[in-house]
Length: 123
Image 1 (cartoon, one colour):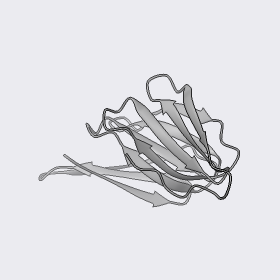
Image 2: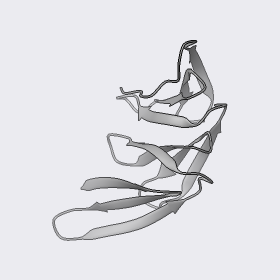
Image 3: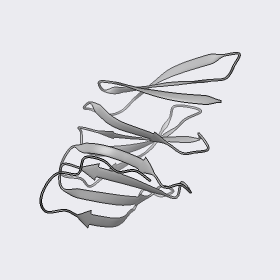
Image 4: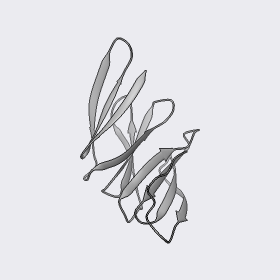
């Protein structure tokens, strides 16, 4: 199955499918523009970061919002899953990278940068 994510202002457009079908749904929940999207390698969950300073975890099959992670004081610039899917990294204009537990949404680690905003995080 292929999974494509498109950013469209405040909605996340999820398109998934195989050779014989395509299905699309719109995931709504952020109050500002969606800036970054990542998906768990098994395709079961999607994480999104937004100008509303939140990270959201979505069920990729149902489109249901599973959890909202709050704690950044600046807009989000990037989100990423760890290779094993157990953690989410989020980067922000608040000069921090936060590591979250993807199963319960708890903040695990905060890394501070003092010079400038963080533009990207990858696994």
